[in-house]
Amino acid sequence: MTKFEYDVLLFRQQEKSPLQLAFVAPADDLLTWAGIPRKSDELLTGFQRFRDKKRVDEEIVPFFQDDKNCSPTALIVALRKEAGLGRCSLSDDAVEVGEVKQARLTIEVDTAAFSTTRVFEEALQFVRDRNPALPGSGEDAEDADETEGLLDDEDDDTDEIVHLGTETLAKMRELLEDKSNWSNDDFRSSVVDFVKPAFLIDGQHRATAAARLGEHGLPFMVCGLYDASWPEQVFQFTVVNLKPVRIKPSLITSIAALSLTREEHREVETRLENAGIGMREVSVMSLVAYDDASPFSGMIAMAVSDPKQERELLGYGAAKRIANAWYRATRTSLTQIARQLFASNNSSNARKEWRDQRVWFDFFVAFWTAVRDHYSESLWQKSEANKLFVGANLWALQEAVLSAADGQMASHWKVPDDEWGFEERSAFLKERLLEVVTTMLSYVPEQVWTHPWNKASQDTTQGRDELVKLFTRFIDSGKKGSPWKGWRNDEWFKRSEE
Image 1 (cartoon, rainbow, N blue to C red):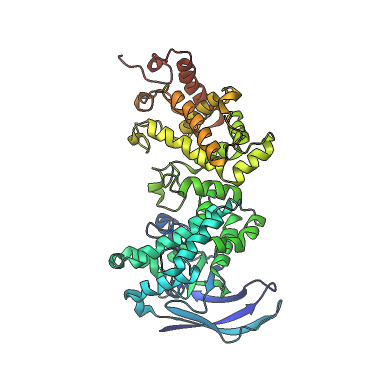
Image 2: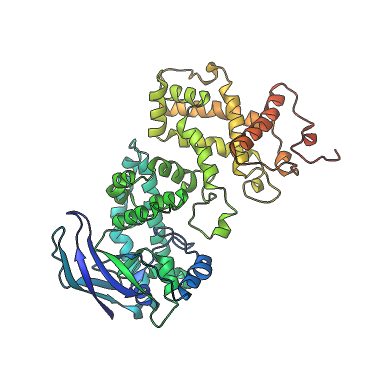
């Protein structure tokens, strides 16, 4: 074991808050005993953002190379009493609220084990400790599956996002149990961070850059949270980065959706809301971006990958705008569907059930699956010649189609048998919606998306409105029985020889 010792100031701000330590440590030492549980291509369950190597190399290292510069704000770490490959201990941890003590912090880490199979064995134990009842392991798995089923039926849409966190943890376990991954150096590097005796909550880029200077890296003031739970660490990372410089809402969604299991989320949900985290947005976007049923699953830029790779994905803001129409259900057609689905004459009550029971997502999936299936699969990805998979265009197409649905007679949505239950009503109403969708899409030929455009679509209010008018013209012409054949000669498109 490699041992590090520090003189610390010890205090507790409030009765139930974590024990806090203040001390100084060189960056190189800190990176030896502190892991950075960042999201990576190998693992998504961490709460730290994707490492920005360009920022480290081109901004932070040059900043520290000027010997007049310093970083006066503290790095924040979570110190673990017991970890897979080490431990943290205090000479005295009995501190009353408001009291300040001096103590000795000892951090032990088994650096020799970093290159052995113990890394993966201890990481598996970390996963089991966070959720002992993960599906797929022995008799406990059956009980866990039953519990998941019961909890999924609760009318709390936050259950869905934490279920994603549980799935992510289960995925980590699957990767760890597959010993063929153990020879992957990138995978090992990601896993090591989860079994060190401390986690770096804030300051990964500063510490990485500062470790390159001097014999042991530049020294930093360190704020340590002693024996803080994983949910507490996720909470601290979120609120620390909320202000004064906000991290992207897409990353906030990823953190809440993928870093916490159901029970862990419940521990900090209210505190996150009170800290200004929009949990409704987290709920909506975690489903749209990560649920396997979503036609956009894995196709939205969620700030957890290399920025270069994310340029090939659908923008977070555009995807949120598309999804919000379904979640809010303020359109005439969606309100009619909700009222028929829940046999209610009260639109507000019907919309509440629509959201609380997550029905909005089921109809969202039905709509966009129909769009995806209607056109060639090659159009469901970004490319220079493809105008379909563009956020503003997808939103405008949805608006044009839903406007046509709004224009249907109320009788179109009328459930034929008042005695029908929820499942029968849902199936009927999806069928009625898809009748409208497939008909309207038939008026917008696939060539529209591959023919060269003369005008660039603008993701602004005015630009999106112009796009809605364009797609509405296709639909209106088709509804009149005369498809718009001369669209290639419109100002939106480059003239063709046809």
